[in-house]
Image (cartoon, rainbow, N blue to C red; front, side, top):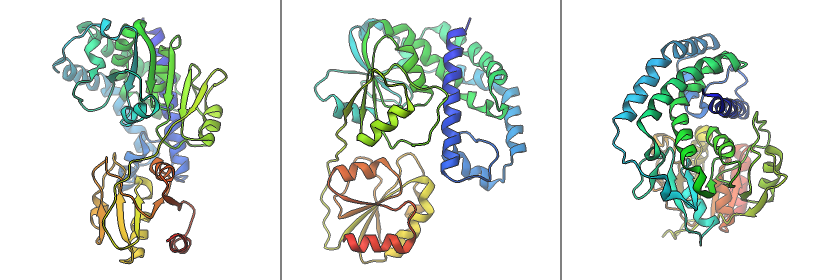
Length: 375
């Protein structure tokens, strides 16, 4: 009954596990002997409440037992949401952008500035004048997705190597709704664009649109040591930041027939009115404590701007004095230098002609020396 969907979903979840495992390794958390879901958000709670492998295993059991109720409430919430049904004919012979990433709208306009595109919202907050994928669903799809989600829990419990990873299946209900909707409207599509590198959505798009023209747009820095269970293999084109990214993509995916194009990632920078030398600290959630120490060590000699990661909490930066906190996502100050641990924004500033100091692996003395030598 669910054979095709389950096969793709298993591939998708295995990739999510690979991503989380790689993140924990890159963060140097060798003290953990399990792989928590969505580490950048969950690690602070694991540390705060001293959650052990045993306790995490108990959470997995609770999820297993309560998953039918969890998915039932998801179904009720979506059944009572107001969405106008639209015909799949609206997408016939069109180039479709799958908005499953907060940056794809911005990036696709850089990659294909002259193309006429239709944007289809997959999982982002409500956007005016953009169709939502759920608008292609019928009533029976919501019940189909509920049964699938329950079945998927027990199917993946059998298939997964580490049974604690079963909590990854919490995404099953929404995932299969998107799968059903996209399956219904895919026949009329010529080309799809998306900006998810290797997560559960990219696996779905790669599998579902295997007979179409599939274009992936790089949205961020790629890890060089990520070993994926499922390697995307149906990509017609990849828009990449640079030659180094192309090399990583070729190692990460099956790209024998893939065409690569360079993506212009330069920014439109805004002038700032100050007589001091200016520095931008580019924020990352996993390097926040070190960023604060660096900013404090710089004193008042420089005009310092801090741009937090847009998807994470910025309250710690607000405690800093003598800095300008940039909370407008679309504002990029023209500065004399930028400090970056490892962020896509650092590459974008370099492409815009700003000197970027990549301080990962440097001690405080080395960072200060580089700043003074640069400015």
